[in-house]
Length: 122
Image (cartoon, rainbow, N blue to C red):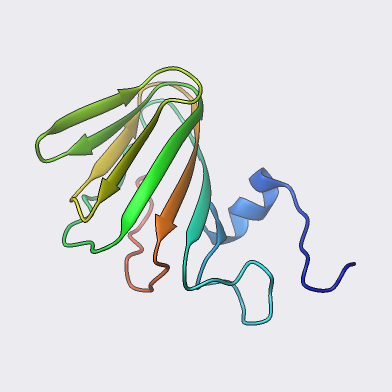
C-alpha cells in the first residue's frame, strides 16, 4: 500500500458508515478522514425515504444522480433528478429525499461536522 493513499470500492466501503466514504467519522490517520468535506455513495431502493427532514443544517451539499430517479425535497419545492448527471446544490437549506426508483447518488457535503446522523428509514 502506498502511504497516505487509499483505494477501495464505493459500494462495500460505503456499507461501513451508512454510505459515507470520506469525512470526520473516519479514523485520524486514515486518508479518508476529513473535517473539510464528506462524500457519500448512496444506494436507495424504490420508495425509500429519509427517516426525517434535516433542519437547521449550516452545511452545503452537492448531490449527483448516478442512476435511477431520485427526488430532493426542500421547503419551497421538490427537485427531481431523472437522468444520469442531474445534480442539485444547496446551502443551509432544510431538506429530505426519496427514491422513486432504485437509485445511486453521490453526495458531497461541506464542512464535515459531527452531530447530523439520523436513523435509517428502512
